[in-house]
Amino acid sequence: MKPTVSIVGRPNVGKSTLFNRLIGRRKAIVHDEYGVTRDRHYGESYWNGVEFQVIDTGGYLPDEADVISAGIREQVHLAIHESDLILFVVDVESGVNTLDRQLASILRKQEKPVLLVVNKSDDEDRRLNAVEFYELGLDEFFPVSAMSGSGTGELLDRVVELLPETEEEEVDDETPKIAFVGRPNVGKSSLMNALLKNDRCIVTDIPGTTRDSINSYLVYKEKEYLLIDTAGLRKRAKVKENIEFYSTVRTDRAIREADVVVLLLDSMQGFDEQDKRILREAETFNKGIVIVLNKWDLVPEKHTQLFKEFEEYIYSKVQTLNYVPVLSISALTGQRVERVLDVAERVIQERKKKISTPELNDFVGKILKERALPMKRGRSLKIQYAVQVKNNPPVFKFFMNNPQELPPNYRKFIENRLRDEFGFEGVPITLIFRQK
Image 1 (cartoon, rainbow, N blue to C red):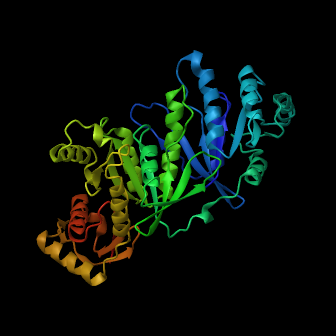
Image 2: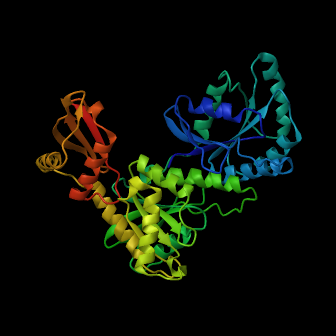
Image 3: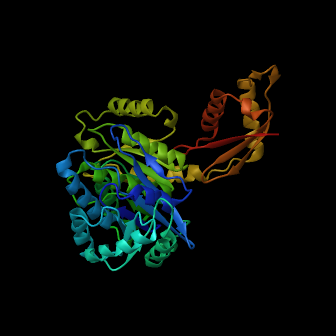
């Protein structure tokens, strides 16, 4: 897992400008979710051979003036909880203020490295004025201009010196990784516990990072898996958006690490925009996907028809993801929890599936007879041949004339028929069309 650097400080000191400077040309991952008016920024930076994740905590504070200070302090506590190093940004123009002193008091009491970034130090006079921030009692400070980039090289040199060694080498790349994701309180911890306490599973805890999530090796039916835990954030946030932000960061990090993403839903709460966003992200990163309806023991009428209605409701919300398997469990009672691993293993095997070139081209010939390619500008489109160029995840390349003219509905037809013929349950498929 890449180490994490959080940027904290009061409003209008230039946190977002520094964030953009640190990630350089790498595009920030920004979520503008329904019902959330503030952007969430986190991206990746690379310096002196070290990769690390950067979190910008700016811009998602409560609107009410009397709770802004509390919201900022809470961001600092959560940043401490989730990060390996903290950049505390202050503004040399406005000098030291009361909120700076309060935040410095919190940061001095914890053991993680903190670098004081005195922003807007654009000229020699301002750099000299930066010494007044020594009163905050933090050992290392860096006068920088996030806008121009002045001083950020020295700051980054120190950042990468202080970051911990990454522990990715501890996890065997051949071991399938399953991430349990979902909204707070859907039962991620309960499902993890139910699986880890199962008599048929052999468990080894892996101390992860400084964060309190614990990933675990699990052996089930003589196969080894790494379970990625995204439950956590045990501190109860007063400002709801703070906890949502860090939960989102944790979820997206887990999705990128995983081979299979298990989205947990609360059977009593349904399916919402946040769940849809998680599925879209898993699909974007070409991860295997399983949807699990937890707390099925609370559903008043647990009959097949009700499950079918729930499944159809989910598919109606994400119509392009009707290849994703859905199952119901109760993590609390242990009902059907083993099926989660069974279905995840099935998806892992589907993700590794390789279709031979002769078999694939027989399939192409069959679908072309079933539904002829359209005419474009008076010329017939033709697919000459196809080949699977990659598996785990599967990528197919089709060679044809004028691929730019192939309409989206025909591309979707090919994908649907490919699934009908060869399966790929729970697995996003990438289709590439190239000029012959």
